[in-house]
Amino acid sequence: MSGNPAFRGRLMFAVLTLVVLAGTAWYVAADFQRARAERNAPTQVEVAEDVLDGPHVLFRGTAPGDLYGRVAAVALDDLSGPREVTPVVCDRVSGQGSTTVCLRTRRGVVTTYEAEVLDEAWRTTATWPLPGVPSRTRLSPDGLVATTAFVTGHSYSQTGFSTETTVRDVDGTEVSGNLEDFTLLVDGERVAPVDRNVWGVTFVDDRNFYATVRSQSLGHTWLVRGDLTERTLVTVLDGVECPSLSPDGTRLAFKRDVAENGSATPHWTPAVLDLGTLEITVLDAEQRTVDDQLTWLDDATLLYGLPRADEPGTTDVWSLPADGTGTPAVAIPQAWSPSVVG
Image (cartoon, rainbow, N blue to C red):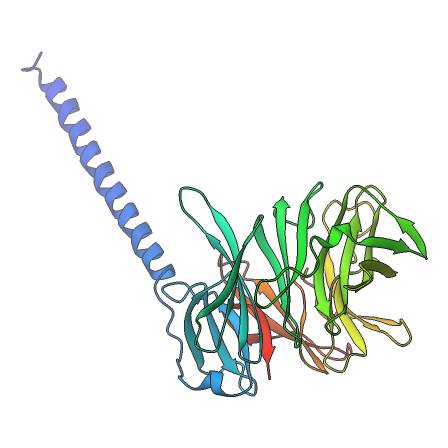
């Protein structure tokens, strides 16, 4: 058989085919590796060293590469300008004065979650464990820290998700326990749904706050005003998620589901509530769904994070006029979880 010319021809053809296929596979793999390296290469950002000395916006960087996840800051009057990068890595961040709160995931053989309080030199002053995936945090001017973590689930749009939201002092001392244990008053009547969840705290002062309470079984998602002393949650409005109090204390920004009735997927649009008149202004210039707790840049402008559709893991912080007269614009590229520190 080995002397058969036809057999030798077929054998040579098979060998050459394997060589060509192997070479093609190598080039495809090499192109893939080059593309991945380029995608994950450190992003060239202009770095400064004195941003944290003045009014600034803290955020979590999402530029691919070594800076990914690092807390950084840009000057309040130059949001797209040079950024000062810190050594701290966070999933969520909030700052007030010289104090910063960081929620993070520690991956290992056993993944754990924690909240950490840091001083102006980025030294740890307090830390405590979280029961699940970090979701929201707010630091009040009075030194209170609100944290929300998913106990089960990873999204507020999931059926059956469960959260734990607590308020602590910056030294880690527990103030509230789980806010789900507070008395819920709906139209003045006490209600105790077994499936209620609380999240999205925004502080008024060292006693009062606003938050979201949801009951899947009752079919409501309420804006509530909370009282840490009385341990009560009093409903203000239905259909409101993740409130954020304006610097002048007169309005609440939040996200509202404007999806058609019966839709399984929510579509969250920014809106602003006037606390004096309870009039709502829907900011429908933003057509995309905004699954974030909005932040006030000042009394006229909102900030929020949105993912890039074509770059998994990368997000931008966008700005939007709070009176409904303007359109969205990128405020801080490759950023997440903004927090204004005046």
